[in-house]
Image (cartoon, rainbow, N blue to C red; front, side, top):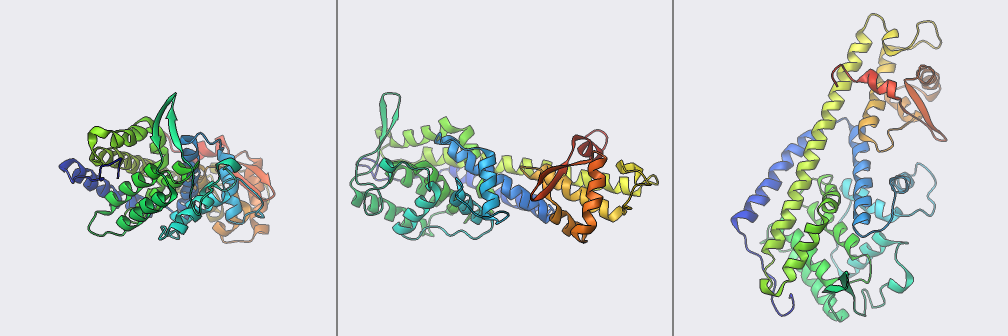
Length: 385
C-alpha cells in the first residue's frame, strides 16, 4: 500500500520496449566478456566491485576511498591476513554476486543478515535496529526543511511489507525485471532501518537483477544511479504522489531506463577494453617477431640473464591486461611466474631487467608487485593508439 492505495503497475508498450532493450544487451555483453582472457575478467570484476561499492556509498554520502575498498578485496581474497577493515563484508557480498555465489533473501531474517553485512561497522549505535529485526521507532527522509518520506510503522507492518516483497519476488507470473524493480521500491518505501536502507536496498536489487542479467552486469548499477541520483529519487517521490493513486508505472519506466543505461555503458566499456587487449596482443607479436629482438622491447642483447620471446611476451601481455582492467594496474611476481610457466626464481631477474630498462616498475615489495611504466604502455600501443 502507498498510503491508502494499493500498488500496481501496467505493462505499457514503453515498459515492454525497455525490457526488450535491456535483454538485447545481454548476449552482446556476454560475448564481449567471454572474449576476454580469464585474468582480464578477474581484474575487471574487482574493478566493478570497487566502483559499485564506492558509488553506493557516495549516494548515501558515506565516505569511502578506492584504496580502502581495494584493500578489503585483497583481504577477502586472502592476499594478506584478514584484519579489521572497512567494507570487508560489503565487498565479500558483491564479490559473491560476481562469482555466482550469492543467493537472494528468502526470509525476513535473511534481509536483516544482508543489512548487517552491508553496513557492518558503518552504523552509529543510536541508529542500530531496536526491534526484533527492524526498527521500532519512526524514521523520515528530509530534503531541506521538508519531510519527503516517512517509513512504515509499526514493526509488524514492516514485516508485512517485506513479506509481500519476498512473496512477489517468487511470483513467476511477473517478469523478473519488473519483480526486481518493484521489490526495490517496496524495500525503500518501507525503510525498515534507521540508517543504511539505500545501501542495503541497492545490494538486494543487484541480487535480484542477477537472476535475469549476467552477474557482472548486475554490478554496473550503482555508478549509473549515482550519475542519475536526482532522477532516481524523483522516481520514488513521484510514485508516492497521492495523485498517482499507487501507480508504479512511471517509477518502473524510470528505473528500467537506468538499468538500460547501465547495460549500455557496460557494453561500451567492455568493447573498448577488449579492443585494447587485441591491440596489445598484436603489438607484442610484432615486437617479438622483430629481427632486432630484444632491442625491440627496449632490452640490450648483452645483459644477463638472457630473455626468451615467449617469456617476455607472457609478462608484457599479463601486465598489459592489468593496466587496462585492474584498478591498481599491478601484478604480483608469482602471478607473472604462473603466466610464464616458470618458477619465481627464474622470472624475477628477467623482471629486474625490464625494471632497469624502464618498461615496468616495482609497486610494492611485500608482496612483490609490478606494473607498466608510461614507457611500457607506449611500447604496447601501436601507432595511432
